[in-house]
Amino acid sequence: MTSVKKSRLTLIGVALAFVLPVIGAKFVLDQSWYQGGATNKGTMVQPAVTLNETMNAQLPDGWRVVLIADDACGAPCEQGFYAINQLDVALGKESDRVKPIVLSRNELSFDFAQTPLVETIVAPAIVDQFDSIPAYRLFIIDPLGTAVLHYPTHADEPTMRAEAKNLLSDLRTLLKLSRIG
Image (tube, rainbow, N blue to C red; front, side, top):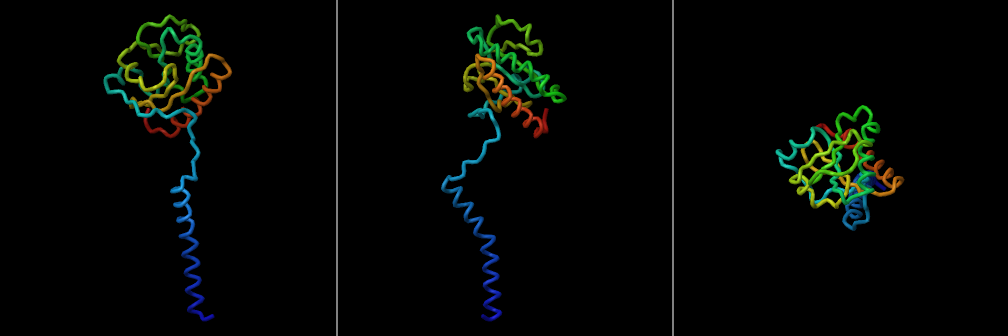
């Protein structure tokens, strides 16, 4: 084999080493064989819900973990109240960036003595904005007023504790990556 042929074969080999992985990746993505790993444990709010400036100003500043409740909710809401109340301890030094809130259309008859860190806000207009989120869900609102992720509430404590860990994991990730709030 001549040196010219040998040089051409080497060049073709090097070019194929770089081009074949790109072609293979494109093929895998086009065939939808790669599903990707979701890093968040909550459900993305689709379509996105963003509060206008007036409504966002009615809520405390920073990141908010919100539960929309009414008197019909019962045990799932009580477990949700307790879970968001515990965020202050669980977040440690980041706790001043997150405010737990309960939103409602009217005054609630729940006993909030067990959850002193949870702020209750009666704001029917804000509650109406979140009609696309299923009832009695915990959800995260960023400092700009956009609902990001939501999580179900559960009546039994062990299941709710597991869901609260999911919320905490996602919230820590958001706080770590956030440049706002």
